[in-house]
Length: 124
Image: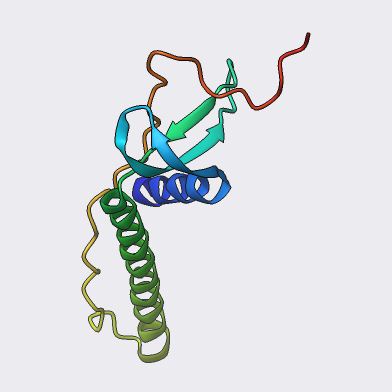
């Protein structure tokens, strides 16, 4: 369940964040894809995520692994139930599928040296 929760949180960050392409404060020499998502807790500042392409690929692969694991686990349990119901035999079960390792959650990068970008103009 923990792996599924991590995958769901990563998915929500990537799907619901604002996406920017440009120079990040910590990578002046090359452009990066940056994700900004508002915090739901005080002080309600945006969270900044700057994953590498390799990290994004690892997130996608982890989501796929957990999806396949969940599907195969469900089929294994379903088949075990129906084999017992229809034949009365309990020993015809498949082994449980390999459980993938826990994925790494996306972690926000702190704003260093400057305040986060302002989304609304300050009042006069």
